[in-house]
Amino acid sequence: MTAYVALLRAVNVSGTGKLPMAELRRMGEACGFSAVRTHIASGNLLLDSDLPEAEIVARLEQQLDGFFGRRVPLFVRSAAEICAIADSNPFPDEPGNRNLVIFLADPPPPDFMAAVRFHNGERIAPGTREISVAYGDGIATSKLVIPAAKAGTARNRNTVARLAALLEEHA
Image (cartoon, rainbow, N blue to C red; front, side, top):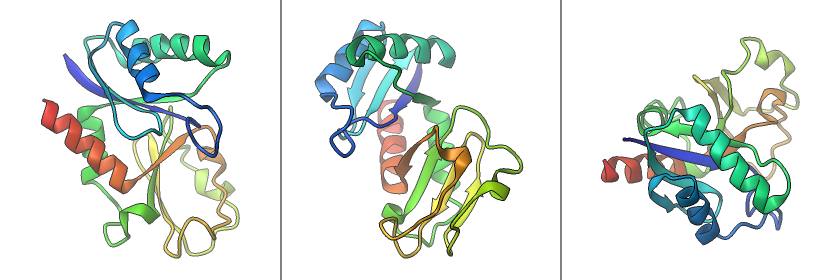
């Protein structure tokens, strides 16, 4: 069995996509996953499975579509991947709440920085299937637009570190 985390996009954020975490756990169990649990109410589902990542995504998408009546983007990472992301923080001097990881389905395009707009001191670094952004003065005042990240979902470094720790504890 491999431990994974599924990161849902736009769930329980600003009053949109309301999904009780008990319901998300039920969905994970209905998919046949084991050791199903959630972390905070922002759509983080931890699970164990022998299935490949694409099948985990397909099963969860079907459950979420049945609940919401629409597609909810989600991004699955293995425990090893989450731990590597947590360990390879390109901006360790930034506070965890101002240092985000934007999870993507695919690697960021090599030229993604050329399309970035309203860049004003934020630091940006590509990863394997993620983009890291350090917001310096804070996210609330930033006007940064990263088109390559539009279809992704973000978690701050504090959450990424906690997810990595939870997955390691479970192993």
